[in-house]
Image (cartoon, rainbow, N blue to C red; front, side, top):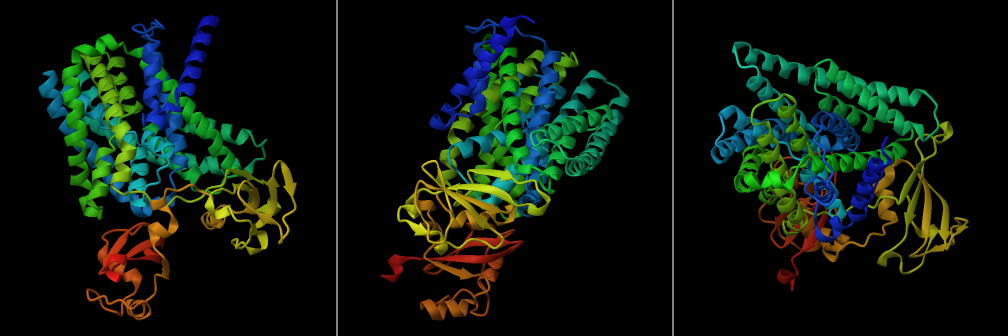
Length: 574
């Protein structure tokens, strides 16, 4: 092997990683940085590397997407299905189809193509990359309400198989014109979703059983999950199913079942997913020469802007309005149609199949992804704040370490740094209220471990080590809260001065606080207020305005609001 190639490849990775902090500073998607570095190292850039091996690129891209989808599946929580499953699936199926059809109309006009080729471009660019969305939002410190975040999260994993199916269908129809092409495409649809769904669920349960039944060195569990996931992906493809759907479902099953060393698995897979995205975008950047994009810049820009400003928003409003979304939530989901790696990878399909105009299709898809990353990627975080879709974030531990001992059950060692205004005044450990079945393991101060005695005072700069189970994390995070939240996301500013139980009667609230609610009966509970005034599933941050009072959903359980914050309109009370 030529050492120069490995040196150049390693330097590309180093440069991309070193430049990645620019993402959070200037609001630029980190994937755009990787893509630009790849293009700069290509034959038109200073690097001058000539890379046109589409078969190798196709193989690497498929494996990289498999790793990314496995990680995304493991981070999809079953609890989010209550709020986001139905709207996300509608958006990921009917929404993808409508997006592809709308884009095809514009593509046929601007590129002067046959209908099937225009539909192929539409199918290729119909998939969104919500994983890129969340990496950008988290980098800017944003935490969206559950209705929006759950819908985007589930859509990100479930819309890729639909886009892949449409692309394969159209590649089959273009390459095999005749009476049997339609029947072959229909059979492919059944096999893709049927085999992919069954194999993914079966593979997920098999991986969980395997990981829990054998004893390994802790560092081998993440590798076992990765290898098993790729095995499910490859086997499903060999059987004619959708490997992408299978590996995503495998990840969902693994992420929502008790699995030994799960925090370590997630930590390692986070790195694997980043490596996969980095390598994927660097390679895709190498495949494209900027000089080849210039001839279609005008037509591509029209299609990209139509997709961003018209097709995606119209599709979102048409498919999601029955599910009780607010207009500002629909507006944000409509704007967050960020295109990422999947459209560029799908654009390799017609090249591998040697279809006519395949190069034009590839370059059009690449250009549209570039425009999407620049226009939508840089405006996403400011728009989320402007539309007031943020809610106070939970306080996660700095680090979680599984104990992996039978006597400990699912307890973990969790490290919480103390910082912020809450801890400027020292407080005794004995005064802190921790959830049941937890214990303080120790307190670290200036590299010294202190005994966790009840009279020990802790303050900003200390780190508290806790033994706790994952189920009490939200409650434990509040007890050790140390976030530097903006003023408008502070607990009192966001939820109000008063905290009430959801089963409190409106009449009781009227008597205690001297407020009259003429709109609703005094015999209904605060929970029923939300049921009547909010359509769909309530989430934290939902509001109901009753005269001078705004009720804010503070905690939910199933489809019930269990804790309510109350904010008074001081201008009407003064």
